[in-house]
Each structure stands twice: as structure tokens, then as C-alpha cells.
Image (cartoon, rainbow, N blue to C red; front, side):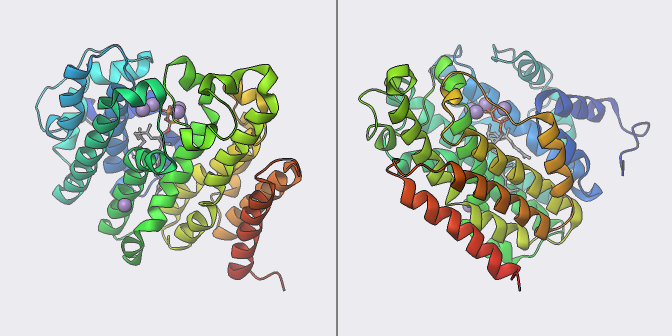
Length: 359
Ligand code: PS7
Ligand code: MN
Ligand code: MN
Ligand code: MN
Ligand code: MN
Ligand code: MN
């Protein structure tokens, strides 16, 4: 189903979809299949946040320039012709900001209700990012407590869940009840972001960023850098498993959220990244390679997950069950988190059993 008629699209919207393809590793395909009512608003929401994240990630911008950019990004969305020539770590991401005027141009044309939702989330996320960027402690020593870590994940991902849920409901494509249970969309975002942070530990270290909270790693090593030393292999794996445990505990809520979606295109859009995340969580669990390189699920695995996540909740539950069992198999009795990991996997199975009883 290709709902877009490219001949009728103006130049700036075509350029937005060009940037969607260029800048997103996994979201472009699912966004392009969204219900026509939300296709353009969600594409723009993605590009706005991608632009904001490029500024957050650009360590060559000094704080006196970066802070107002982050905090005022919601106002920038309404500044005709605004562009920014930064030094984004990724060339494609940098180019989006160089031509950001096309996003501003298209943003003007969407329904005011959608614009208000996107602006509000952009403001909250920009302020959150600025709070963390502002804190020199954070950049040098990383986040301290699990609470700080989850607050950061709230700013960069929980809020995306909130904005998307509001867009789904505003478009009449999701049950209003989903807005009452804010903890569910929060878990959707937390799950994706935490898996991203566990997987990207090496890449983030090389970029001088640390997101694993001290409250967790300090139980296993003296200094954060020690996680990467070959002689601390067991400690690093136990630390990795504690991070995985924290993420895994969000899984039942994610399935519960997905159960509340009715429109097929919205379901697919929300379910695919979650399936990729549980598969990635299994891949990184007690996998020492994550401390050396950026590991990724294979193209073949990703394809199968796409198919399984675009049918119904039952198949997505099967995906979660499959990877949760795989994690359980790799669970090590010598790991201090052994018991809690097995309880978390058990809760996933139990939850699925309540929705789809096997007998
Ligand atoms: C608006 C679709 C569906 C209720 C750019 C989707 C970066 C994991 O930096 O690019 O490369 O390591 O791999 C996406 C909830 C957000 C959370 C957050 C906006 C799901 C700016 C995704 C995506 C909520 C901050 C991308 C959170 O990972 O990161 C739209 C429901 C952007 C979602 C960032 C991370 C997303 C992320 P990097 P990635
Ligand atoms: Mn990425
Ligand atoms: Mn970032
Ligand atoms: Mn980033
Ligand atoms: Mn929320
Ligand atoms: Mn990352």
C-alpha cells in the first residue's frame, strides 16, 4: 500500500521523505506504511526529533550555543527558513539541519492539533536534553542513579511514546483509554531506549558519552572504563545482565500497550520496533562483544520480525516468548541477577498466558 502520490507532493514534502529515508535506520519503512491521516505528521515528528537529537549529540557545539538551541527548538519549528550548519557526527543527520527549512515549511501545513502535540513534546524533550547536557558531571561521569537514567530515557523516548499516543488518539486510530495509562506508553519508550543504550555502550564510550548508571556499574567494577578490560569479563557480563534485567521488566507493559491498538497500520508501526528490541535484548544479553563493537541483529532476522509483527498481537507475543526463552537459556546461575532474570522472563510468559491461554 503506497498511499503517497509523489507527483502531487510539493518539493519540500518530497525532500522530507528523502530525509526520512536517509536518517532513520528502522523507522522509515514503518512510518511510510502508516494510515494516510498520520503519515505526514509522524514523518515530520520523526524529522523534528531527529534534528533535535543531532544537536544534542553534536559535541562540537559549545554549551552556550547548544542550550538555547535545545530549549527553543519548539519555537524554531515556526521560524520560516530556519537552517543550522553544525557538525553532526553523521553526515545525513547534519544535512537534515542544513535543509531544515523544508521541515518548517511542511510543519505549517499540518492540522493545528497535531502541530500542538509535536510542539509540546519537542519543548519538553529539548528542556530535558538541555538539563542533562548542562550538567558537566553527566558528560564526564555519566548518570548516577537508576532514577536519573530512567529520567533521561523519559526525556528522549518516554515523551516520544506520549506524543505518538496523543497523535493516534487525536486521529481516532487508538483507544482514548491509552492516555489514562501513561505508564504504558512510558514503558514503550523506555524499552526501546534502554535496549539502545545497552547495545550502543561501545559506540557511546567512543563518543565520550555514558548512559549506564553508576548505581548499577559500581556494583561490578571500580571505574566505568574497567567494564571494557578483558580481565573484567565476568564483572562486565554481570553488569550487562543487570542492565538487561531492568529493560526486560518493561516488556509486559509493552505487550499490554499493543493490546490497546486497533488500527492495523498503527499496530505495525508500534509493534515492529518492540519486536526488534526484544530480539536485540536477547542478542546483547551476556554477550561480551557489545563491549568491543556495535552488534546488530541480522537483516534476515529483521525481515522475519517484520513479517511476524505485522499480523496480530498473538504473533508478537510469540516473538516475545521466543526471545524471553532464549534469554532464560543463557541465564547463568553464577550471575547475581540469575533469580531476578528468571522471574522477569516468567512474568512475560505469565502475562502472555493471561491474554492467550494455551488450553
Ligand atoms: C517520532 C517515530 C509507539 C507508544 C529521533 C519510537 C534518539 C530509541 O541516537 O536512532 O542512533 O542511538 O537508534 C521517532 C512508543 C527521537 C521511541 C530516541 C522519534 C515508542 C529523539 C524511540 C525518534 C516511542 C531521541 C531512535 C526512542 O533510536 O538512536 C518517531 C510508542 C527520535 C519511540 C532519540 C531514540 C529513538 C529512540 P541513536 P536511534
Ligand atoms: Mn541509531
Ligand atoms: Mn542523543
Ligand atoms: Mn542519537
Ligand atoms: Mn508520559
Ligand atoms: Mn544510541
